[in-house]
Length: 84
Image (cartoon, rainbow, N blue to C red; front, side, top):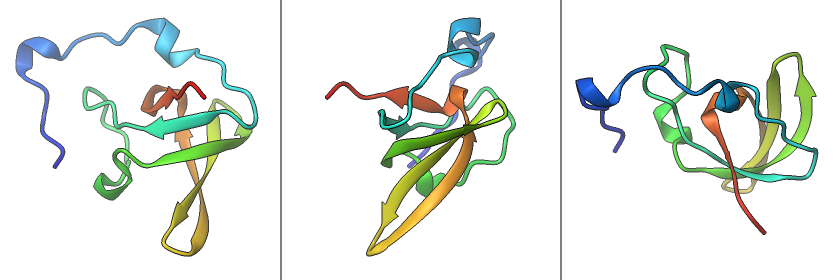
């Protein structure tokens, strides 16, 4: 379940999170940054995937939903790099 951040925990997001660079093939976890009002579905919270490409300021992440492969376009703020 996705809960809201407490009021004091909200605030500015570090610029390094906005401008983080990810390479193709990096493993990432999708975690919604709740201090932003951007459309990201609740069911995508915590899903892991592989960065496929960069599209403008956003990244295309390939995930597996059941037996289907899906592509999600999201901003770098909502992605956390996973170490292999």
